[in-house]
Amino acid sequence: MSITKKPEKKYILKAAPTKKKRSPKPDSKFSVASPMEKIEKLDSSPLSVIIENVQPAIDNGRFPIKRIVGDTVAVTADIFKEGHDSLKAFLYFKDKKSKTWTNLEMKFLENDRWQAEFKVTENTTYQYTLKAFPTLAPKRVTEHGKIFEIIVDIPLARFASWYEMWPRSQGTIPNKSATFKDMQNRLPEIVAMGFNVVYLTPIHPIGRTKRKGPNNSVNCGPADPGCPYAVGNELGGHKAIEPCLGSFKDFDLFIKKANTLGIEIALDIAHTCSPDHPYVKEYPDWFYHNSDGTIECAKNPPKIYEDIYPLNFYCKNWRELWNEMLDIFLFWIKRGVKIFRVDNPHTKPFDFWEWIINQVRQLHPDVIFLSEAFTRPKIMKLLAKLGFTQSYSYFTWRNSKRELTEYLSELSTLPVSDYMRGNLFTNTPDILPFILQQGGRTAFKIRITLAATLSPLYGIYNGFELCENQAVPGKEEYINSEKYQFKIWDWNRPGHIKKYISRLNQIRKENTALHDYNNLQFWRADSDQILFYSKISPDKKNVLLIVVNVDPYHTHDSFIYVPLAELSLTESESYRVRDLITNKVYFWRGSQNYIKLSPDQEMAHLFRLEK
Image 1 (cartoon, rainbow, N blue to C red):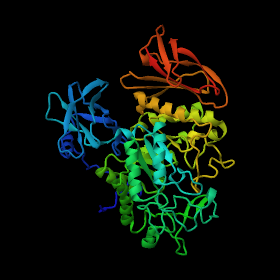
Image 2: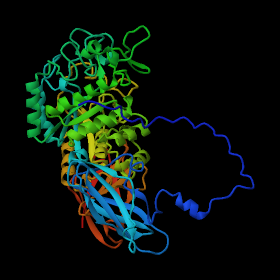
Image 3: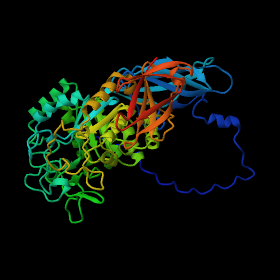
Image 4: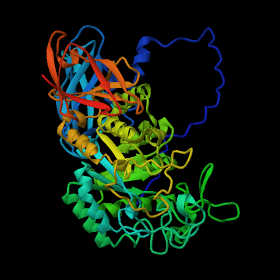
């Protein structure tokens, strides 16, 4: 597959037009055109009906909205004309590859607003548009003129529990890498905790030149494995496997075992190269160069990564480079990988991502892309619009009631929820939040409860279940990080919260309200440390009322105010709620109810309404 045309640039500001000379004022002989002469100059007949404000639409249809197979898409628009004539309006939709449109008559709502709904049943791209005409003049049809698109993903794109695994650290022999066989042996335990996506950090050969030692030290011993994000050596690059992990046959067996257990494997794709990567010799023009002609290493001030060379996506032979990056994704898809976590996409051209994701989706519409872009909000959102299926978020640093309410409300409501799905990671190999460093086991339980219930997508980095919180002093970084060394974990060491995680994931699986993304609503709680929110299924048969103490150090109590109208309850009506964590049942009446959450007991209630 090749690029035949450079993607159209959409982010370049055009130069301001040159100022035209002002025309001289007409003299007394100047005659104004008559109304009929003006009409004769019109290119077409006047519009009978106005169609505007079509929803859902991202940036007036510039980008597709996102849905899941089985979703119902409700399309609305303002449709009207002058006078009092009645109208008819129709919604047209189809699979993008189909030549035949299906049409539905739209229903009038109020104030010139019309609506029609259709269900998306296939994992593909759909299109829709609108037409309308006066009832008394059906031949005077007004077409909206724009075709809107919908990316319809598989259910795993919206509901999944991710477990980030460091391949090298799943074994039991000190100073030796684990193998795919060791990783395979860990899968049943991960399944028992309820995770259905296992995400692997890079599995490729690691560069030897300027290899980093423990804790990112420039002093690297002969037995130190280096950082796997410095991809490539004489054994290969992005399409090769680090020999310490095993062979391609071993990898295939690992994928097969995971799929048998109901797990999908996600692979980390980092478009970075070590100085030893084959690309450096074969395609030196693909990289940035210093003034002396040497290749420039990666920099993220004040950090300098001497062991990594960044690719230049604007190089002279950019088409060749882009095609090779596409081939990397297609290579691993052929080996059974359908989920990719993409490292630092915000440092690559926007046009590149729009092109490459579209190319992959045309061949494999079930592929999922997770954007790892901890950057400015507008860039994170644009990457989601350009095609990334899921996105990392600022949840990792949102701890207070106000921060969580404001940020999660933004993510889960329109227009953001139409294109951006936040995957709430509690921690990452690069990020050990201060609340986890200082709040101990209680903080770990609070954060995973929030992540698992605020969004249908969440993830943890291995070691979270052990409440691992040893940090570099004063920094949000793990000390003795497995990014730079082998590590042996005791997966059953005292103080772990594996049973609690298993229970949370079982609750997620059994309650459909937690499968939806945009049904999050926050409600009143008197305490500024008590967060109260609901998740309600579309049919309202599954109602969850969730209460979390966000302060890991102290007991807090509060009145919470149940949204009775949302639940079709009255103030005088009694009802029952069951805490799904403890299985205790409580009988409530009215909206105001009292709760108390303490670090020495549980810090959250996951109430399910049982009328």
